[in-house]
Amino acid sequence: MKKNFINISNHPSSGWGTKQLFSAGVLGAPLVTKCCRAATESPDEELIFCAQCGAEEPEMTPVILDIPFPRVPADAGTEDIIKLAKSLVMDIRQAIGTSNISGSIIHLMGEQSLCFILAQMLIHQECSVVVSTTERIVETDENGVKKSTFRFVRFRPLQLWSPEPYYEPSDVDEFERHREPWL
Ligand SMILES: [Zn+2]
Image 1 (cartoon, rainbow, N blue to C red):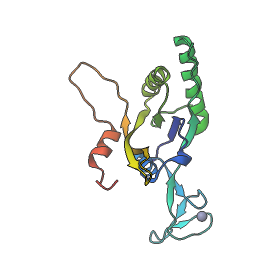
Image 2 (cartoon, rainbow, N blue to C red):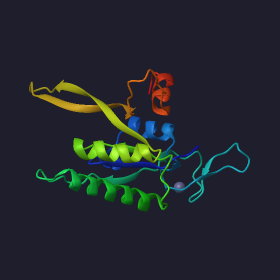
Image 3 (spheres, rainbow, N blue to C red):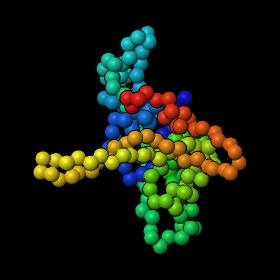
Image 4 (tube, protein in one colour):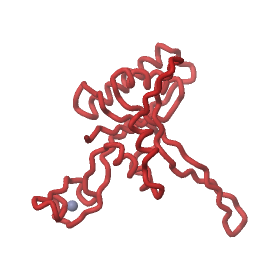
């Protein structure tokens, strides 16, 4: 089933690498053609082509709705953070065009206190909240200058923890456990 995929971070999806985009698609973000951001059509179910321009077997890309992570004032108190979190929930509703956001996947990266409150609100409304993990790659160029870049590794779910001996694996963990090693 296709799910709304919302990115609340300061890393717009336009700058995401192939692996991160692919993972978003596998988690359920709807796919559109790269050429025209259109659907594919295949009446005979053999040849897939872009519904807009007719390109055959077009490359696909996931639909990700970007919402910039707001600046959190250093002197903000809990009430301010709750206000910011509520306004982000409204932004999500507006982005997906309905007040029922359940089933949506929210990629959430940013200031901790706002993430913590917002993640609780979203989980309460039956959204999946995920973060990205990265690994640091250090390369040395020909002048001996070291350069670090961060490479996306996986999406990891934020889940409520309980001292009760229960554990319900999320869809995200299930996907990561079973995905092909080349991803
Ligand atoms: Zn096209």
